[in-house]
Image (tube, rainbow, N blue to C red; front, side, top):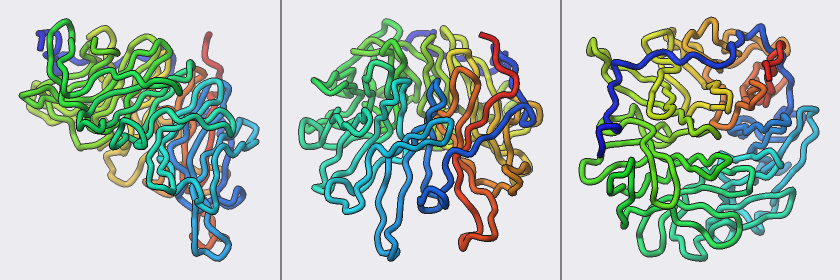
Length: 397
């Protein structure tokens, strides 16, 4: 790899957001979906994805009245709480289940992974209730990464393994699938011929211009890195030669339309302290958004949300090891949107129940999240609710 890919973590500086992060009192919270009122099973609302008009897409499940069966639902809800069901199959005649993560664009299209009743796995884009198959194991693929990313042009990025055994990065819009790379063929990274392993079935991130960010390992060293590009031409976004804290989706990145990436990483600083951090990469310059040296004990499972203003929102766990919440900066007190120490609609929040994902932030600084709130009238003792948080002070254009 080139020297540009060797990052000096001791030189990281705290990210200066382009817009001031608001504390929790600076937001209004609107309930969009309630598992009781909307007839969903508790704790089955997952990974709310938010677009610019304030629409939110999500996956949830419903149970049969006799309690003997259940099925998945892909739905979209607007900021007024009006819900549109995109896919639902109570009889499971077509679908067994869907991916927890769904991706939403500004046209209201939604992409997701599906496991069909005939055991075929598919990547699907829903335009209203019309479904378009992007990729399928009935074709050239033997397995598919279920977490996808969808841009405004309707192009869906995903990871997969071909029937040949080659694994890598792909995208499609309903016609022929584009192969961006597999582990079988060298690619150019920062202008240097490089062998990538082929991915880990994680979630890639595609922006409006079709650039795709992804996590992979470099052969033969197996050093981890974050890369961006398409069709075999890539640049380094994140560190190589370092190990990430954790596994799975923790290594996956986010990407905005300016080509800025955001991801979680771990490293030892100049004082020898082990640090887990959320970082951004802008034209090769990395900055720390938040870290475990300054009030956080850890971060959520999915990569941080990132908008085109450069704002970053994320789920964080506090160093009291009892509280968590949604934050937008390095200071867990000043930069909190909502924490488990707060109340929503007068109800206490259950600690460690927040679900906040990669597409939960829009350009207006709004965030969409799922959380459990206490409700003694329910058998389970709580409600699972999807909220939209809006800054009380509109952001400057």
